Image (tube, rainbow, N blue to C red; front, side, top):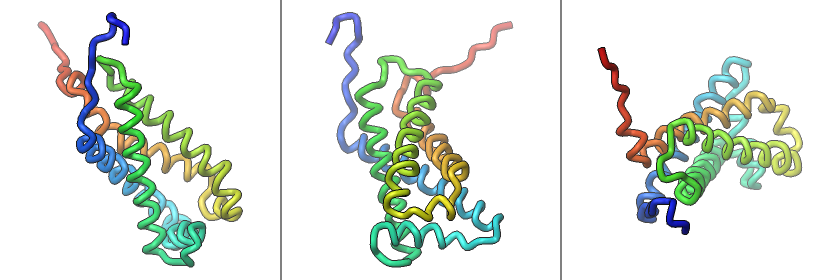
Length: 165
């Protein structure tokens, strides 16, 4: 480690797991809410998406299994984001850095999932959930998880705007 960079210890593993789980939970629930609203607005049952997720995992058309799989993957993504953030963050991150990091990471994950993995596992998934809708849901994951990630940096949360007259 170069001497010009201040030492910044990593948080304990328990804190990383807890905050990562919060990121995943908030992002996963935001996606479920958004997709449910979209499906209801297009006069389709939201359960169809959860059933498709369960079918991809070869569990049959089970709505509850699809929701559990989605939330489990969301938790893993949140924990992964938190772990990577602890490794790449700067000593004095800004709020814009946090949002840029979460958005970029989620876009990379979305690109792999919806452009590579899902078309090979379940070719009709893009007919159920169009790319723009799934992309918007991914961005909501990033926007819902970024405040949790932002709270891990005391420098950001303690910043105040000073107005002088």
